[in-house]
Image (cartoon, rainbow, N blue to C red; front, side, top):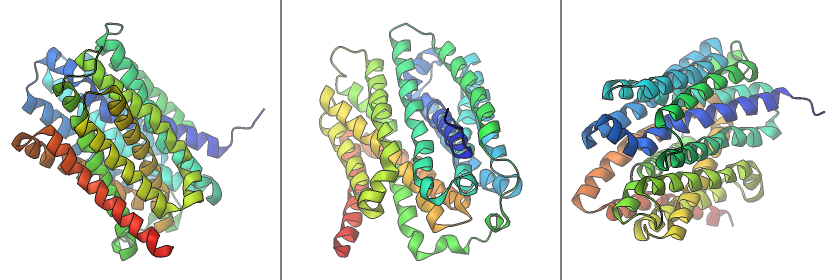
Length: 389
């Protein structure tokens, strides 16, 4: 029998935590929005406000997580995040109006800010340097299972197999399970003294600019995709043979299944190098946005678009984790938090700007305009590779 090592426990706890916090907690509202509109008679303005609350709660939780990590270690914020997700899910399941729905979405959204960054410092404590990229890739890729499972359950809702309140009650039970696993898998106690410095001067070095740029571009690309992908497909006539809500579920299913490619991130980085892999990832973001913009009614194009996007998201998520650990040794969680703030800023700004552009032109125009950001990143990283050849 293979012994369950601290590395396996940590990777398992992280996989579950990210599956919950970046699956139903972060993406569930957008996926279930058609159902929520009907159940709570939501206007577009109300829906946008509630979605923004989830992103803002995520952003607010990030500095709190960094503060907790320097004082009580990594276990507390992860357990707090899982508990926040469970409570938020329960509030949504029992909501009788838009106020209760908004409160639940905000609490659930905060879990993403609590549940991920602490694993960088935790990995530095219990995982060998050689095994860290693979362990952190496994943790980041938990998201893909969460997204895929959420998409599958919503598909069941659209065909009448499940009641949506039951599904959100199931999410709440999973949140509690995540808290229990975190209690066992995440090391307790304070971090090492060298990791507890709050000096921020090192976070403004020139060599960390590519990390922040990649994080910002990731946030913009992913948030715009999640906000507008389903709407663009539905507005273009949907997918043949499926109700409109079913098209959204298929996008998230493909996104989640193909995101399992994130498990290979550590090995791919060792094979072709970090800069080249970043170029490939941002090329995938570009392709996913262009495919969706130009061919929103084709099954092949839509599934390929969602698959490319899901794979790119999981890989860049893993890279931001171990890249920040390398740039900020001993302060991995603080460095990762700085990168995640870049992701959050892009997530808030991207949909707002592109929403205005979509109203002025079209969703197709907004998606193509968004594709310019990862295209520029692709060119930038490709240029760096060519200079080394």
